[in-house]
Length: 285
Image 1 (cartoon, rainbow, N blue to C red):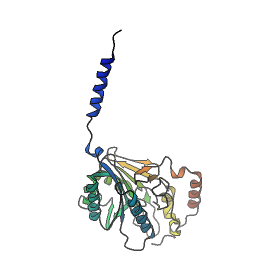
Image 2: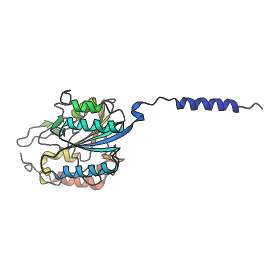
Image 3: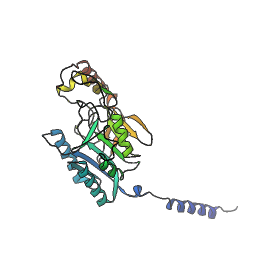
Image 4: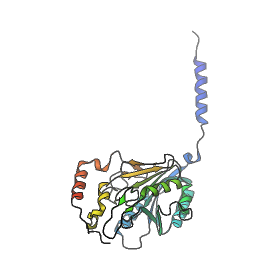
C-alpha cells in the first residue's frame, strides 16, 4: 500500500510556516497599561482621597501594568500617560476617569483637574486636545470608563422648584468621546458611581446609592430607577447599548459583570422602598 507520510509531513510543514509568518500588529505586540485618572482635590473630599490611596497602593504592586494619575489638568494627565507608555513601550488597555458628577448642573460630565468635558465641548478639538493625543495610544481593544455619577445618563432631569427640566445628554457625551477614542469601547453610568470597598475585585463596588438625605429628593427618581445601570458606546457600532454593571479587576482592566445589579431581589426591594419614600424639597438649591 502506498505511504502518505511524506505528503502529510509536507502539508504540516506548510501550515507551520504560514502560522509563523502571520503578521502581528504593533499594538498586539506591545504591553498594555491601565490608567486610573483622578482629579487633584481642591477641598476636603474623603471619597477622592480614599480612591487616590487605594489606586496608589495598587501602583506599588502593579507598576508595569497599572498607573494612578492625580491630575491638576488635562495637559498634566496627557504628559504623565505619555511618559509611562514610552517608558514601558506600551499602549493603553483601560483608561478610567474617576470624577464627580452634579445633578444640579442638569447635564452629564466628567472632569480632569480643572478641565470639564460634557456634550457642550466634547466635539471641540481645542478643548479636547489632550484627550485626542492619548487616544492615539488606544485601539479597538482599549476600554474607557466615565467614572462620574450620571456620566452616561440618557434621561431628562425632572423639573423641581428652581430647577427646570433638563436633558442630561450623557449619550451625547459618550458618543463624542467615542469619536475621539475611535474603535475603543466607552462606558458611562445612568446613576450614581460609588466608591465602596472591592473596587479592583470585580465586585459591585461602583453600584449603589449614597445615604445622604438630599438624595431622597423626588428629583432623583430617574436616578433611583436606574441604580447600577450602565451603557456602552463604540464608534464601530454607532449605537448606545445597555450593559451589565461595570467593574475593574485586580490589574485595573475595565469589564462588565456577568449579572445586573438589580437582578438581585434584595436590591430591587431596597430600591422600591426608597422610591416610595421620595419627597420634594430635600435638595437645597
